[in-house]
Length: 109
Image (cartoon, rainbow, N blue to C red; front, side, top):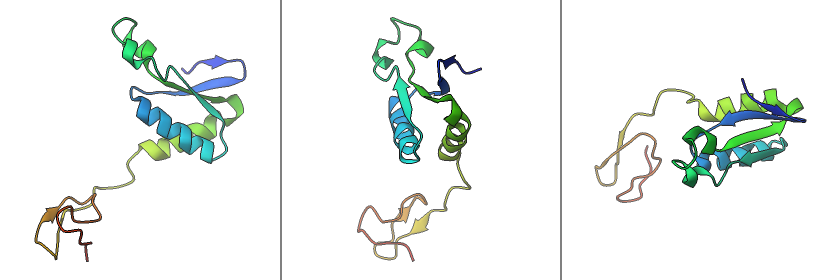
């Protein structure tokens, strides 16, 4: 169960501070005020228990449900990975998540 503190509610604890910062930006863009706690404690893991050092995303309690839905949308994959494609410019096989050939700069058909 997530913690509450005053009018704030923790909606996510995540190991990666970069993901926490990315989610903070997305929530802020959608008008959900949030705060990332423990942003700089990851380096202290070992001195303090790792889970205590992970970044936590806190939002106003009334925004918690909307924040969780938005976080789920961002973190959950939306479908199957795109298939690899062969560059028509140089013949290189490119993994499906890439939209441009790394070798010659050509785009897929």
